[in-house]
Every structure is written in structure tokens, then in C-alpha cells.
Image (cartoon, rainbow, N blue to C red; front, side):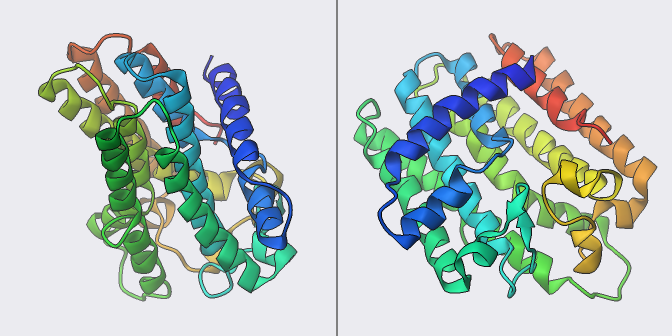
Amino acid sequence: MSEEFLFQVKELVKNKISASINNTNIIEKSMRYSALSDSKMIRAGLIFASSKINKNLSQESVVSLAAAVELMHTYSLIHDDLPCMDDDSLRRGQPSNHIKFGEANAVLAGDALQALAYEIICDDDELSDSEKVYAMKILSQSCGKNGMVLGQQLDIENENNSEPINQKKLNHIHNLKTGKLIECSVMLGQIRSEINEHDKNVLKDFSKKIGLAFQITDDILEVTQSQEMLGKNKDSDIKNNKLSYVRAVGLDEAIDIAKSLTSNALLEIDKSGIENKESIVNLAKYLVDREY
């Protein structure tokens, strides 16, 4: 069910992105190359699933918000792959952006995708001005100096650290680098929502838990799946001596922790008064049940 759901999300979001980026110069070609490549679109899916609970957002606004988040995520991947960062040559089953277009153009394409994410929100006719400001604020907070960017810096800083891996530090990095944008996606789907504050907090806590479970699952897949299935370089984390859950606690315990986080998240949302939660529950299960 979640694969079919994500397929429908991909079609809508890719159409929006394609219509938002022309193909007239090298930067636009570079942007389209990465933004329209085959991807899971998990974050976009979470916005759609969250909006099923909300029902007050128009389809146009849901697509706009989902496209904005995916553009922001794609920018981060382009920059993560650069030689000065993780130095990866493969992403989403194709050469990384800087391999195809050169480092300078990859940096500029990433910058342009980030700017376009905000432009798409600004251009949405269905959102009020205050809703646009709110959407841009939580998106920028999730990706900026106290979010995804800080997570990437801490991740790089801890490469080649000879000290034993601290699980608390690892959680902090994962929550920033991956979890913040996943939390943002769930909460973007609640713009104009009528659910009470308690249930909003339940959703926020739910998103934090599944965000961490999602990144732990990525750590697991890094060592259990083939390069073809991953769509990126096999053992990239090992090459860069990255902090990961598999290195910290071992494969079996990492799997148990990911499943436990998801189970706790699902239990909390099940006990809440939130209605129409089937889509977000199914998607959460899908995230952690990806093949090991």
C-alpha cells in the first residue's frame, strides 16, 4: 500500500518540480538532473500522509510543500556528495551531480534548489501569507545552523575519531542531519490543522522517533544491501569512517532499536485521538520494514 501511495506522490511532486525548473542553461540542467532523478520521496510522502489527518490543506498546497521539501533534500544530497564533504561519486543510481556537471556547478545547483524551495512556497496561491511565513520558517529551522547543516558538520567532525562511539552523540547527529527534515515534513502537513495541541505534540514526537528509526535503518542498509539497491556507493560510511548505529551497537541491536522506536511511535499515535492516521502509520511501518 505504501509503495503505491509513494508512487502517486512521486508523480505529483515530480510534475511540480519539472514545471518549476526550465532546461535553458547549465544550472537548470544540473538542478533537473538531481531533482528529477529516481528517489524514494519519503519526506514528500510524509507531508501527504500528514495532510490526510489535516484535510484542510488543498491538494495544490500539499504538492507545493512536498516539492519544496524534496528540493531542499536534493540540495543537501548534492552538497553531501562533494569531495570536500563525503566525496561520493554515485547518488540515486547515477553519477553524483559534481561528477556530471563539475564541482562549481554542483554547488550552484544546490544553492539554486534551496532558493527554489522557498520560491515555490511563496508562489502557492492557496496558502495565506502567514501560512507561507510559517512554512518557510520551520523549513529553514530544520535545515539551517541548528538543524541539517549542523548535523552534517558534526558528522564530518567526528570522522576518524578514535574515541568509542557515543550513542547519545550519534542520536544527536542523526536527529539533526536526518530527523529535523522528517519532523518538518510531518508538521508542514498540519498547516491549518484543527487537531488540538496534545495531538500535535504526539505527531511531533512520532516524527522524531520515526526520523531516528529511518536513519538507523539507512545505517543498516548501508552494510546489508547491494550497491544497485542502495543507488549509491556501497560501504560509503565505512570509507569515510562515519559514525553509524551498526558500528556503535552491532547489526542485530541496530535492527532491534529501529523496530523499537517505530513500535513506540505507533503505540503513541494509536493511543491518541488522532483520526485518519492510516496513511502515516502505514508509511512509518514501511520506512523501518525496508529489506535488510
